[in-house]
Image 1 (cartoon, rainbow, N blue to C red):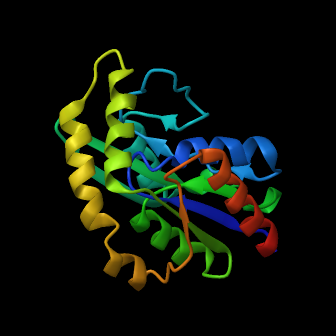
Image 2 (cartoon, rainbow, N blue to C red):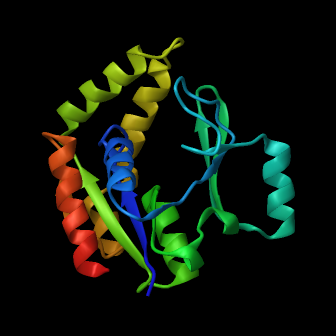
Length: 193
């Protein structure tokens, strides 16, 4: 059976770094989500996300091709992140994606609990905050207010209670080397496949 391995964690927990490493070293197929947020420096359409405008989001919503979506009311306006049916090519093999706890639950409900496997990455808040600041500093126009909003929102979005309600008990610490974290996750995935 093909699976969807779904990486989650608070912002700046290293999800993207771990995701890229696992993609490069396995045969898992990437789940590429859609977003209406602006492209960050270094991102490419169709690689990190499919970057679309709100009109395209509404067209896809009306056609019934969206599995789940979230709207974030940022200090820079509303940003929509969503998963469309074409985001997950499960018929081609096992997939790996990144998302939120909320999106994980909706995708799990859509595909089934046995198909979608949660992979939760956690990092101590002090380390996570410093990583977030460093990442933001590298942008042409740093968005520090948005960084702070996300940092605070993550405490509620990934609370111990919500993780327990979602049945997420396996966690992968990423306070040190992302390579070590990726190796532990790869072993976990190989045990399930």
